[in-house]
Amino acid sequence: MAKRFEKMNEFEIDKKQMRRAFSRAATSYDATAVLQREVCGRMLERLEYIKLKPSRILDVGSGTGWGTRQLMAKYPTAQMIALDIAMGMLRTARGSSSWWQKIFSKEKSVVICADVEALPIASNSLDMVWSNLTVQWCNDLPATIVDLHRVLKVEGLLMFSTFGPDTLKELRLAFHGVDAHNHTNRFADMHDIGDMLSHGGFAEPVMDMEYLTLTYDDVRGVLHDLKAIGANNATAGRGQGLMGKNAWKMLVENYEGLRRDGKLPATYEVIYGHAWKPVPKKTADGRAIIKTSFKL
Image 1 (cartoon, helix red, strand yellow):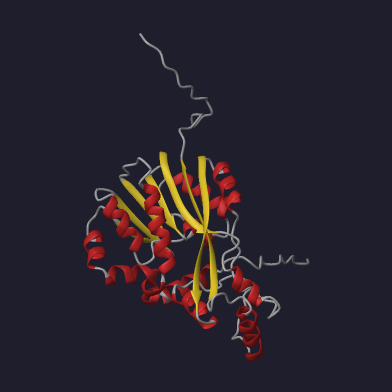
Image 2: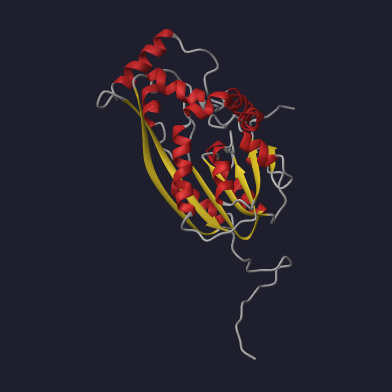
């Protein structure tokens, strides 16, 4: 009997490779993650306009804990669950911060090494899910959104940031024609993510986007920063060996053609979103829930 072989999606994220890359980058992450902290700060500013007093928060993709610390400072009485796929990141967080050790020595907060695409979290147990620049690493984002809806309580908040399709567009252009491999991840469009949230059960998602650009003196600087934060290309279609001398020369020449004001740009399309888990319209057995107001 002939076997059927399905072609692997060339943009599928290799989770083992991703986990290794982030674990290796854990000790260099904080010194390089300028963009990640900036986006986190802008997300925190958005929280100022949201009335919420969460008692339990999940930080998805907590990394070395910078964002987790900001959330704990804002919501000091909340139980914090820090979740990251890379054990190296969590170990670095716990080993490098006396604040982190103090917080997580208490029973009220926990650290979990797990993938957001396989959440080991009870249904209807969280008041807020927070995720800064993590969900772009999901292979099945619609299913992930459904699961994030599952773990939230009714009227719970999902707040996240991710990257859009124009992210690293200069690097993608520079690699064009160099070889046949993928060199950047594929990113979902803001409007598509909004549709996923609606289809996943969330109410009236709010989405917005902005471009942030980092500048570098040379191509090595661009690639060094990506490696230092663990954001290496982890797609199935990536090249498996070292780049040859001719390929490197072509990459540099292509990128140099994009130099502006003496610097090489690296653009990031940053997408922000938040949505609420609404009160259900039906009971578990399918009966409609109708709100009424009357006076006796």
